Length: 281
Image (cartoon, rainbow, N blue to C red; front, side, top):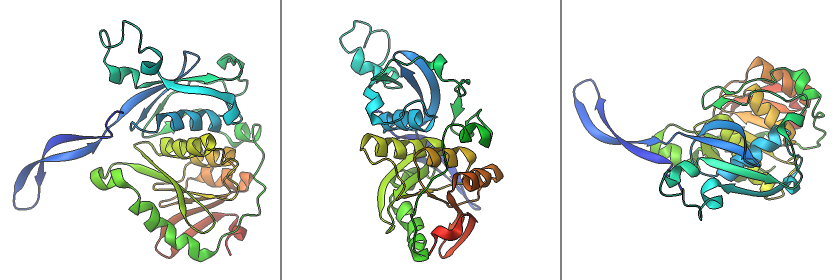
């Protein structure tokens, strides 16, 4: 497995002096996701949980419907380990930056009508395209869930998420996404340099563990709530999304349309409820 952190020599300044030292940084590497050797997307991510990232991405992009659509996910080094080229022409880590997904049914990416776009992403802005609520509405219905939460449950979430961010503790440079149950217990926590990747890793793990739909759970993200994060929650049927920071206008609009309770600025015992407050008791 590739390392998730890397040491670099820096000089740390304060008002009186400078100190040279080794600092631990989060690793950022490209991951190419392929379907039957056909390149789909390259994302910038923090290595780790790459199969979950691939599964979650395919699911939240509506390219697969369930875990039954996935036959196997593997790194290219696993598929090519007996080939002469491995270890001689390319380093092993380069193959660990390529994930190949074999689906149970043959699928041509050109057949995904309504979703044909240029799949490019980076760690800061997430995915581009499909930027209207109408495009999402055509693919998925609003969430119908009787899920409700006591208001006091929300006050526990921030600390529980933060205490589980082990790589952030070392580097200070990662986003986190956490899946919680109705009692505020953290079930899945994933970190990544890309906030959308962290969400895909959480949903991917839930998909591979046969936990979907997640209509009795809530999702918390360590940064802001963007349109793409609400879109991913909608596909996974998550009725409540909580963010440490603000929500964008389009995220609020999609949450209203998708019947998602969207909460931002969760700090201690304060929060801003943007949509569907009826789920909060």
